[in-house]
Amino acid sequence: MTGTYEDITYEVEGPAAIITINRPERYNAFRGRTVEELIKAFRAAWADRQVQAVILTGAGEKAFCTGGDVKQRAETGDYGPTESGMFEIGYLHKLIRDIPKPVIAAVNGVAVGGGHVLHVLCDVSIASETARFGQAGPKVGSFDAGFGTAYLARVVGEKKAREIWFWCRIYDAAEAERMGLVNAVVPPGELLKTAKAWAEEVAEKSPTAIRFCKQSFNADTDHQAGLSNLAMSALDLFTASPEGLEGANAFAEKRTPDFNRHVNWH
Ligand SMILES: CC(C)(COP(=O)(O)OP(=O)(O)OC[C@H]1O[C@@H](n2cnc3c(N)ncnc32)[C@H](O)[C@@H]1OP(=O)(O)O)[C@@H](O)C(=O)NCCC(=O)NCCSC(=O)c1cc(O)c2ccccc2c1O
Image (cartoon, rainbow, N blue to C red):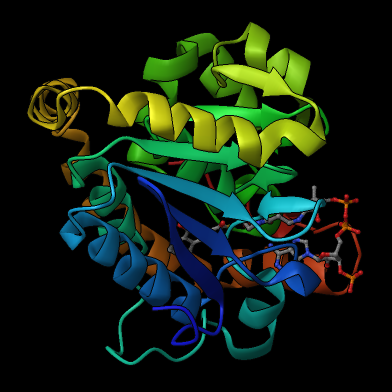
């Protein structure tokens, strides 16, 4: 499969498929094409009998993934063209949950916005000591609700999830470990080695038992997919609104957004 992708790389090493978001010049932010390629890679990993676990990571040392490509959005008002004509981030979220093999996030740098949601949805997260975490939507005229809010609250609790979303702060790896957002923190040079070791260890277990366990964990929160669908529909409208565009344009222009004229409580 290597070579058929532009925005990601896909390799299989032993029992692990390693999917790397490869847009370091944009801090591994995703555009429509990136999401489409991630879907293709996760489906390839699902179908491959050799693959017992999937590792999701980002290229370089700076970023895991910083969510939607805000510069692309400021430029074209959307996340760019795709083969299917759709921006299927909601489907990618479901795929990470539904693939019946453990998905390990190897968080090598900043995981922010929709990139943070991706690691939250992975079954486990291993972070480099230099990793940073946070949500950014309300700063840049977006929000990634549904799994992005409700499932995060399952992981870190309601109070912390609301703090993360409303204040859009950036947390270091030690703080992320304290709040149960990551399973382990390792030195940067050890990250991929550790993720591969976790993949090898889980590959020794019964794949059928793992599959049932994963589906059983998911069953408890699968209803949140309905919230996600609703949120994605709302987001389509919101990101194209003057308020949403003000957030994206301010980021691209490196200025503080002015949301004052959009205060409109019902
Ligand atoms: C991530 C940061 C906190 C890092 O800050 P730091 O100070 O370390 O680095 P810089 O800010 O200088 O960034 C370096 C370099 O990378 C570019 N960059 C960073 N993030 C992005 C991005 N998301 N898109 C494009 N480019 C990015 C940055 O401009 C710099 O480039 P230079 O050329 O200037 O050197 C900080 O960078 C940050 O806060 N980034 C923005 C994070 C963000 O807002 N993400 C998007 C949130 S919205 C979203 O993710 C989203 C998700 C969905 O699922 C959606 C679904 C449906 C519709 C919309 C969705 C959506 O919008």
